Length: 216
Image (cartoon, rainbow, N blue to C red):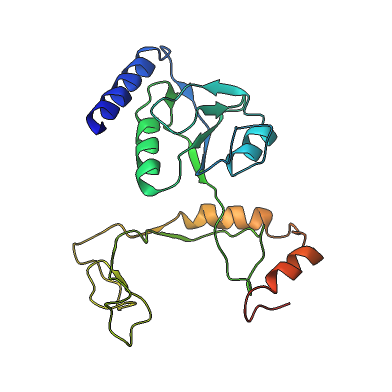
């Protein structure tokens, strides 16, 4: 079954590439989302739908190698939905990067998605700008029934022997667990948006109280 699926994926890629235009489309911005609840428009929104609707990404481009079709607007903004998980994300972004329909040479990539947050620091709908990306998938995990009694978790960093072991030093050279984003671009985005007021409603404040020790 896996071999058959791989063959179908390869065939779909070849067909898509064969239909590529002579001159690639120059993309200015690639918006990367991870999940969507249903359709790309018109129903309960996930991460993708608001971008599709509010940025008028009305041009639909078949993308059989990926998770959903690609969406683009007349201003050069291209959106891609990767699917949840590093395996889907890696395969989708590799397929996009190799797609001859697009010129991504000068494109900016904006990775946007929802995530958890400490309720003492923020509420649902808060916005956070990150300086670093940390890949937490590369690790060992020991069954909680078999860990030492003084361990709080069985999750151990790759190349380490205990949870939270320091210093963080790559065992195999540059292991790619931590990536620093372009600080100038991060600061530009922060300065551009830091004074925008996000609503903190009574309903959200009440929701925060469901967490032990949460501030009002």
